[in-house]
Length: 169
Image (cartoon, helix red, strand yellow):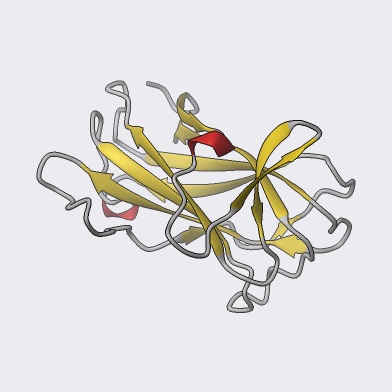
């Protein structure tokens, strides 16, 4: 694959929620969305197989397509993402083994309610993405860092995840 090529796409229906603090499935004008609360760190987990065409030389970028339920204007949201490699004798699926989260930092929310914005998180190849290579199973955890540990997320109301895309960097 070449830089910028899409490797995976996940929608709200692909979410395999964790046992607690999970984003909730909802709809907005019949569009499935995942609601991430403004006061609690909530998460969504997506399972995939890294395509055989992934070159594995520079890494990936995760693109989070989202809208806001109420906040707009001069406020910010913070998204985080982490990879877990699930490959041949690598990860016991009875436990989690996610790498540390990477973050978007402050992302200005759309100025108009219902408009979709796209936030990106870069991962370098190797341990930053739990050493996922072509053909490996993996899980991707998406979190809104909203519980006050990040002073940068000051948007009120739900952040509504519409889709997630992984592209080769």
